[in-house]
Amino acid sequence: MASYASEVKKELTSLEVHPEHAKAELAAFLRMNGVLNLHDHQFSLDITTENPAIARRIFKLIKVAYGIE
Image 1: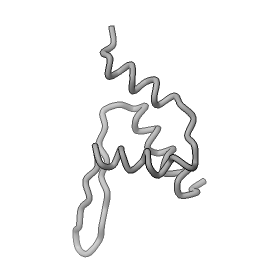
Image 2 (image 1 turned 120 degrees about the horizontal axis):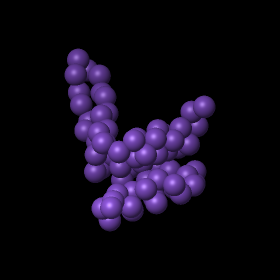
Image 3 (image 1 turned 180 degrees about the horizontal axis):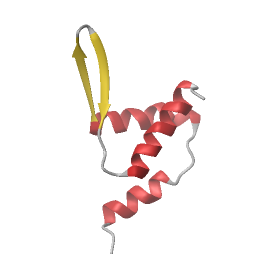
Image 4 (image 1 turned 60 degrees about the horizontal axis):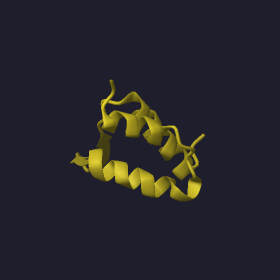
């Protein structure tokens, strides 16, 4: 039996991505799972998740929020 948290994540990742909400949702993921790094005067952003559905959702949010095809 899956945990309650797993069930909620599964349900949330199946929802349609709305362009007007994509940046806000992405910001929430970044706040919870993101790390901003500075190395050799270059910024990088690392987002860590063990859930493949969450990783796909984050990728889709980036594509929608920033118009990447």
